[in-house]
Image 1 (cartoon, one colour):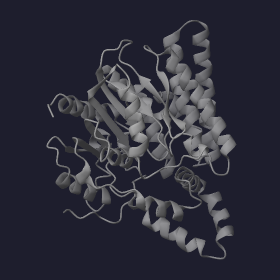
Image 2: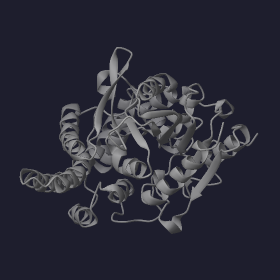
Image 3: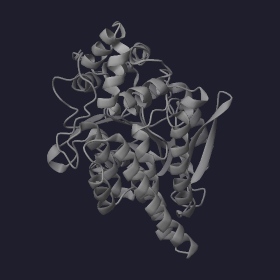
Image 4: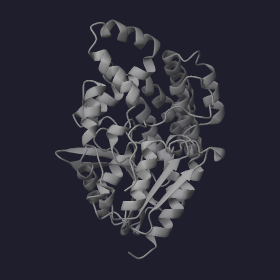
Length: 414
């Protein structure tokens, strides 16, 4: 069995910088830039907003994206009033991205009302765009354990012809709406319906008492139930895809849920407790034991607010009070790759597929233990602009690799 390396956090320090020297800012900016491929942003708009963010200040980040969102939304409203539906929906899609960007630096632990209000503002723009698409996106509420999982269903056409369908899931800091500009138009152009949904821990579900859970197969199966209840979903061509933390959720789910015919992970995570940065976890451990930690933390928040906001977000999504508890809870988030029996595409950026890292070890282990002959590992390179987390800076290449593979395996007899 290939050795699984013990030390490797998810890389959030882009090798190629676009606009900011500050690591966290450029990491998120690259995602915003990449969303232009499918209408989620516009290059001139986003580089102007970046020019207004001085010296890595979180308040400047929030104000710049809010202001851009307001301008783009206003153009959408003007187009809608004039009956220009295409122009309106394009503006609303970009306004969603810009209003959503401030949430990256607002703590859902300490500012939940502000966090919720900002999300609702972004979501309202997305849902206006959804109604103007052709066909319109369907909003779905999937029954699960006395409540519902929110999401959307994108149809190739308004008929009941059974079609290939992709169920798309995000990670540890995503909303279902984020997934539209990541992949939905790419799927529709290729004849795939796309169902994209928040699982527990995602979207605003933590605020409803639904944190991340290790048994991802349980809520995932509720989504499969919904998909297979639709006449326009071909049960023999049902696939699923998970990005970032979804690289754990989706492969874990298919170890149990066998109605899915193909699985894509970007990228496979066999042990979620290994994605946390060891040095930072140890720093938190020592700090929590220190009598002077609280005043030091206040100073560090002033100097490194983006880091502490990220930690707050993960604690909120995992339903814990501190990062040490989050790491402890995540030790239950493990996968036995030998239990994955459908074809698995494991897709990486070159940066994340480092030989010294856990992800490399997980990929090697999966190659040995996932038995389906159509399983595959693909590493996308820096020299094609595909070196960002979840291939966020080259969505055309990501889509080409993913859908070409899906086309092939879904047409292959079991």
